[in-house]
Structure formats: structure tokens, C-alpha cells
Image 1 (cartoon, rainbow, N blue to C red):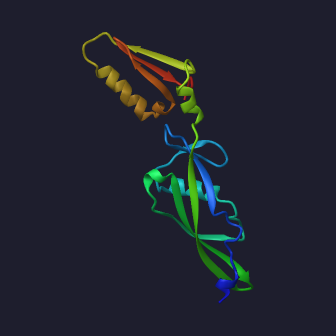
Image 2: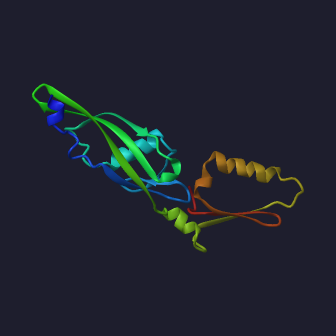
Image 3: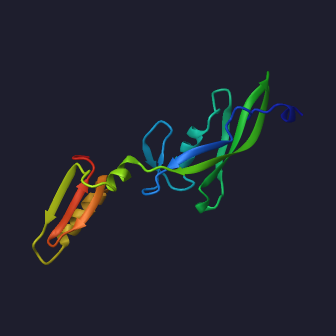
Length: 170
């Protein structure tokens, strides 16, 4: 059997490290930048596949999926099914498991939130009436336009709220 003689998974790394922010649970992409991805999601699988060295043009990825691990173990396992032409008109398909170690690395936005006076924009909202409908509507607008992603800090005052943002405009 040709499968026992030829190992097409030889150049593929079996142990890889990926970085996750422990505060906001975002993941660091290999090229830079942080993305939001749920556990065992398509986005996280794509990030894991980009982190694995050795997957190239000659080696075709047929299937990939997560193998269940304990959520607190800080380890992910990805099962890969790879295919490559070993000889002329002879295709070999093999399965392998790649272990990904999750390392904690704080993202720049979370680093900024733990230091004093690092905000770029401060919005002070005051309302001097008994009802809080306007503030609740403002909260819904912030969530609707996803401005809460740039929100570093929110502090309550006697008559309203103070919003601290990372950017002046988003």
C-alpha cells in the first residue's frame, strides 16, 4: 500500500501557537489585526488554518474540523484531511491532527483601557429630567451603529453619562 510508504503530512507543523486576548476574547490573525470569533466557529477555523505552516499549493486541504477539547484547557485540536498527488495519476489522502496552544496576549485596545487618560474622545451626556427615555434611546443607537466596540469606559454621573472612546470618529 502506497499510503504506508508515503507521508504527505511531513512538512505540516503539528503544534502551533495562537494568541487570544484574555479580556475581550478576540483572536490575533497571523498577518496582524484582531478578530472576533466564537469557539469552534468558521472564523476561528480559518484563523487556525492560516496559522498552520506547511499547507501549500501542492498539498490540497480536503476537509478540516475541530476535535472537542475541554474549554478551560487552552488547547484546540484541528483534524485535517489532506490530499496530494504522490506519483503520476496516483492521489494519496491522509488525515492528521494539529494541536493549537492558546496563548494569552492582551490586545492594544485592552491595554489602552487599563491605563489612565488614553481616550481620544470623551462624550458627556447630561439629562435633567426624571425619565431616562432619551438615555435609553442613545444606548440603543450606540449598539445599533456598533460604536460600543470603540468604547473604553463608561462612567455614571449624577445627571447623565460619560463615554470614553478610542477614536474620535468611527
